[in-house]
Figure 1 (cartoon, rainbow, N blue to C red):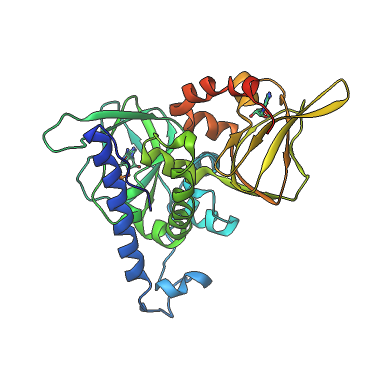
Figure 2: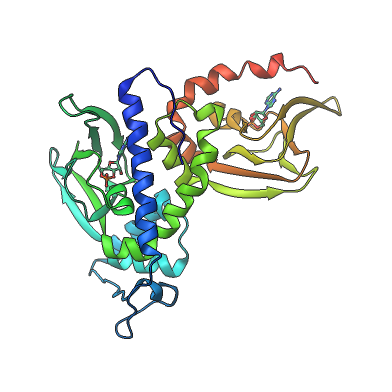
Length: 325
Ligand code: CMP
Ligand code: CMP
């Protein structure tokens, strides 16, 4: 559950409450889903999805080129990162190409929603009215490889924002049925698993809760044993890490001697310098206990960590000030 924050801006607190509200609704939906459901003997039923009742996989005819583009975009869209190959194939079959002209509304806040979109080409604006009667706020511009429209499907609620094509655009849409049977559980579970951890990460504490949820979608996890090197000084770096469990130190090797230059605890981050400066890793990161890290690749880092870029840059000064305890 996302913690309620004490914020001065009423906009931000209503945003927090909105996500919190969505989470409550999600729990309700899940409780309902746990009730015994009708099973079917007919149709094309996929093993583990049996328990959810009949699922007729949808096949939308499309060109080989469209299938290729869908595969490429899905590998970039975080929402699908937890799917295996078989599940991905079902989703690709069900996706439909939709074209929009600049200025077209793709989603209107408050409407019922029954599809999710992945952007293939063009840009789309996202607007939201946070409080009735107030003007809408421009939240972001969606780019190719990003997805939107998942909230209405995840939590069975009206559309939470408006999406309007900024340029001519092509999106791939995925229907509610396929989303519910193939994507929803994995995506909702991942958001639930990481939202509490991320809400306590100091670097992200003032970030919009919705943006934090998207970080949850994109995270990957890795375990290390005591004394393992998570990062090696001088190597190329494409990943940015948060420590979910355990302790680490940073060391630097100069003139053949390795010296501790920083220490970390749960919730801290490292690996930002190589990604921001486009330089080799500036230090080693060594596990001091069994460690679990969650990490973002450089593409996700650029797309999702943007809002805290200034804090990262400001924090760079901390390395010079570090004194070993
Ligand atoms: P949905 O509510 O189905 O439709 C509108 C979409 O806008 C929503 O899903 C999200 O994918 C997207 N969106 C982007 N930013 C936000 C935000 N801050 N709050 C809610 N929805 C957002
Ligand atoms: P990066 O250079 O990508 O990989 C090694 C990381 O160690 C670096 O990012 C910082 O996050 C971290 N670090 C800790 N202490 C230092 C230090 N004194 N100098 C440089 N990097 C440090």
